[in-house]
Length: 107
Image (tube, rainbow, N blue to C red; front, side, top):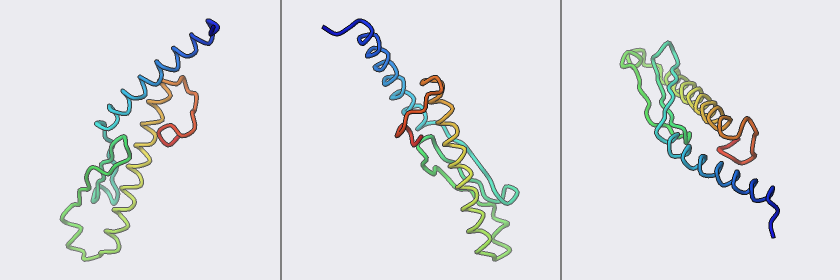
């Protein structure tokens, strides 16, 4: 027979698992945005750390500086990914009570 404390713990784990599955679905729909170069390049990333879109101000093409554009794209994408990871960690902390569980959403 399983002790009542163990049964309670198992129920709590199942409840957390369910909330995490729901959160994964929700985070796939949520996005964060970051820009570089004073808004010349903007990257949008979802909660699954997928780049959803990149917007480039047409004025940047007038300079003809391809290397600068490449650097701005990298900077905007990296910042958007960082913000997405923060968003995921904040939402996970709400479910886990701040307990960091290795391997969970890249934590």
